[in-house]
Length: 189
Image (cartoon, rainbow, N blue to C red; front, top):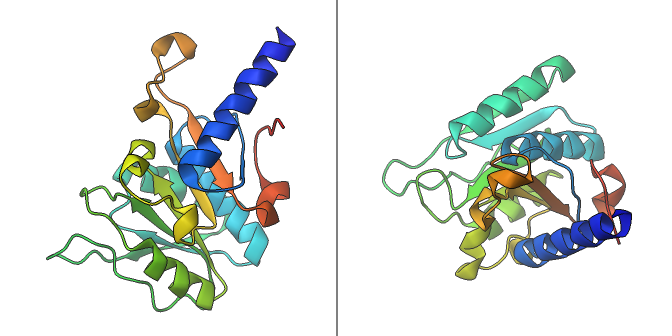
């Protein structure tokens, strides 16, 4: 049984790496919203900063969980505006003391974000780019890793997670090797 559990965790992590375009993924996250909060904690630890810039086009429940996790650690959240005409998130220009910029792909309005522009702006300011990915979208879109994302998170429910596996959802988190030691949960490989 133990070897079977390790095998399925390895297969899950391998699939997440392929979907996100990132070299390493973990297991054992509750859902997509808590995965975003864990990614934000990783970014704050990596940069030594306590501000997060979060797109208004990230779904409201995720923004709520992120705010709940941030409060006891005295992390502040800046909301990134969304262009009323296009529905896309404005590229953050005041990222000098921000740990991470958080966007969704596609966003809560169904708009495909320009991840390369967000990554360039974040990296120019020493911040990380966290992308909350709808995993089935990479059937048509380039992976966030290929577009400059530092951490990619999301919810496994769109992949067909059934209730018989303990609940309606599972979270995933993938990142570059530079952040591997900060990964929450388990890594099998």
